[in-house]
Amino acid sequence: MLGPRQRFGLLLLGLPVVIVFVAVVYMLAMGALEDQSRSFWQALGWSAETLSTTGYGSDTSWNHPVMVIFVVIAQFLGVFIVFLIVPIYLIPVLEERFESKLPKGAPNARDHILVYQYGAPVATLLDEMRRADLATVVIEDDEGVARRILERGYRVILGNLDSGALESSNLAEARALVANGTDDENAAVILAARQAGFQGDILALVEEPYHRKPMMLAGATAVFTPRHILGAALAARASERISPRVEGVQVLGRLVVSEVRIGPQSELIGKTLREADLSGRAGITVIGQWVEGTLKVPPTADMKLVAGGILIVAGSGEAIHRLGEVCAGTTTLRRSGPFVLAGYGEVGQKVAQLLRDAGERVEVIDREPAEGVDRVGDILDHHVLAMAELSQAQAVILAVDSDAATLFATVILKDFAPSVPVIARVNQAQNVDRIHRAGADFALSISQVSGQILAGRLLGRQTISLGPRVQVLKVSSSGLEGRHPAELGIRERTGVSVVAVERGEELLLEFGPDFKFLEEDEVYVCGNLEATQSFVETFPQKARTAESSATGSAA
Image (tube, rainbow, N blue to C red):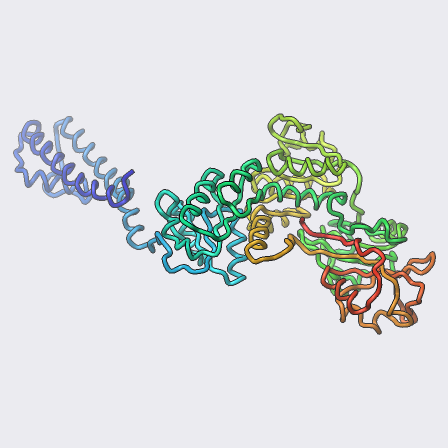
């Protein structure tokens, strides 16, 4: 295929030929049809004036019909050349001349992370590496994509394995190689890197799980399947049986923890926790608030309650029920019934498998009939939604391939069944906020998942967190007896909140000025993992349910 410069060269050669050809025909036609002789140079001038659309000199009228038709054709040919052919051949050359040239190598790169082929799974990784002050070099064979990467401030090499981009990337000095092409491309890259003597880590992202073993045999250090991990994260966020938001609360005495949605007409919207006074009005304690997929913990008195937010509240069963009565527009999220899953691709199949293995009911909707699909149709179709069990559903999980379809489906679902939570799979990380604004309660992109996994491996992290985590511990009052929570400075010293105190048959959720911890009290404290660990270290005591950790994370 000819490049811009070669095509422009052909244009420069072809234009004189066309001008001379039209001049010769004009010269002969004027003599034969109009009985007027024209020299070659006169005809050449007319041809150049006509084909360049600049006008005419002495020749401005013709009488013979054939001559008139010839002149009209020449005129349109000139317009075609000037306004279509020349720009098509000239503009790419000018762009190539004035745009910055994309590098074909990175000979000076040192201790860098080499990424083969850019895409959604590695977009977040590049940002993570920049925050960690680690150099990255991306090998990309699409010129447009490569230029966008360069404009974002990342080093890029234009090329692929066949063009020698791997050899020109200073592979020997790289810290690690991340293979993000197709599965067959990744295998070839891994083999080429090992044959070149590269001894560092090679991390591969695969589309098909059964390709993991061949990748390892080819020389990969670790192989990941981001779509399966994304499916697991969505399933865990959906079902408490897989990843409870407050795990183990069923054994925490009289304390009940629940999730309550703040509806669009709720009187709580815009109020702070102090102004809402949920403790005084309903006898419950707020542990945190989900807002656009983020769990905000620990709550503060000035934390605003937002429409569509989901409060995690703790209290007695009667108090949880009373909250919906005294605060209009709040509804407790359903914890029974089916999950409606839209999309049965690789991610959707993983979600369905995990939910069904956990004993959950799943109704699968997909455009194509297949084993495991319960209803064939489009989630964007109101007739399909009307037949689905949305009124009884715990949540709708969107696992469709297109972010545009996910966005539109979210809007439709929030209009069709506003009280049903929507959990969405997203491809591009930049679309997560848009889908949240459309009404999704939780949205997670494959870029976030794979970026966290790869960054964790490259930075030596032992755990991967895809969201905030919160623990609820039931402990004894050892070390707290005779004093008030504020006097002890528990929140200030450790970061945890005292959620409740179980005293005999009574569950205390308010701690007035006269309150003092008693020796027989059972105390519930809540905070993230670091805060609860700090509490245990500051007030040494035996945690009654040390395993009762709760995760509000995406994983």
